[in-house]
Length: 369
Image (cartoon, rainbow, N blue to C red; front, side):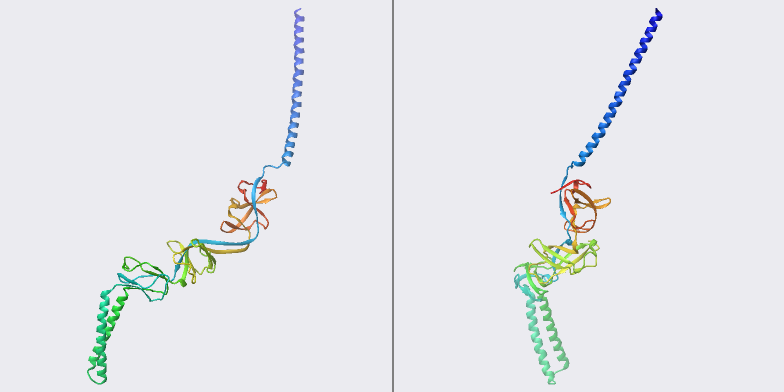
């Protein structure tokens, strides 16, 4: 009986074991099947996504463009300049005194050596009057001795003495007149009275107060400016120049007439100059902007300096290539007034992106506005 029960237990256990193996096998097979189906679906989804993205455009960047066209390009060196005069002087007395009279007015043309004003010099004038009396007397005595000597009357010593006295008296008067002229304001040049900085009754002392009458020769005006030594060799005599007078809103075209070859050891600058003819609109000490055209190209391709991007590989900009942005490496030349010359990399007709380029990469979609 016990043996029969044991055999029945063993048989049941074996059957249960066999039945469990069949369920696990089915599950494993089902799992493998599903994984293969999922892999197949993933592959199909990936292909469909790629196809859809290929035919569907992405977000385009809005840009503005300019067409590269050959044009006249001038490169300028720009500097602040001043109007000066080769003959612009303030005439002053040589001796101190009080202004007695002013003989000219502003705008009046005067000649070199002309008296412009007189200072009081009563003491010197009295000395001149006394010298004139002495000179007349000495002259009369000398002439009398000349007549006597011609008649063989008198001595030669007496004649020579009276002659020396007469000549000394004449020189004394000349010295006093020269001294009197020191109390006059005399124009050292020919020109136009531009400023009268004195009035009758003013005490003048050249050593204390540099006041007087300014005379300008408007036929000898010049405009001068200083350039840093880094411009040496970049500007030449004869370069075209634009002079811009902001105060008078006037512009003048001329040429550079002088370029200094020496650099100031302190300022490290050299001087350039333009000599002008007669121009009543200009006055000494006026300021202006001097634009020196030191480079010209009649067929230059130029772009705004701002579109040039400096990279490790060099300078580049973006052009519109259809509906995409294309990065182009370029070589630049002179720049002036916010524009730069492109020597290599651009061709006539290329559409240069001038706005929106900061957000672009090569090949990005663009929308030209």
